[in-house]
Length: 161
Image (tube, rainbow, N blue to C red; front, side, top):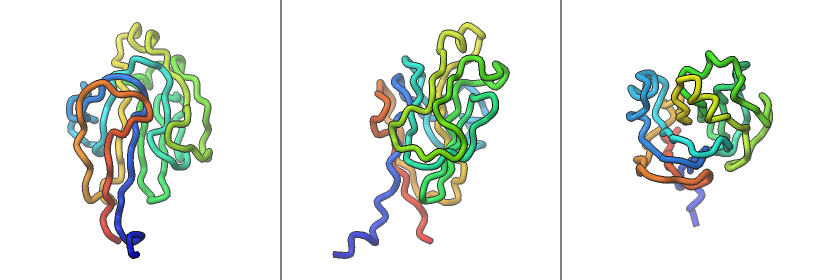
């Protein structure tokens, strides 16, 4: 009867098809040391980037290499496309969303030209980071391996208010 009081958590899906790895294995200290927050990364086999959660687009960088999504719980999620791709000035990215849009989990956010990113000498990993960790009680561990966009990656349990 009182199940609505239970904290079921937020389910976070894969943003892209590819190989799932823990954020600690990302080839960039800012991400691997969790300086920006915890999360996961995927070595993509597709350039179609999808929303890992439902929420509102809070940030879309002018260089299109990073997207901020804010969930109804107030969690800020950064979807970062590649490493050092800010230097490409948006060239490999085509966005289907803009700041202020409401998105659902699995919705296409945009595309990344993987070949262009790799040919520029950069890592094309897609990194999903939970940036306001103060809201989070726990995060389920990442299970390495092949994953498809929309597959469940992690469940986040929030601190009680």
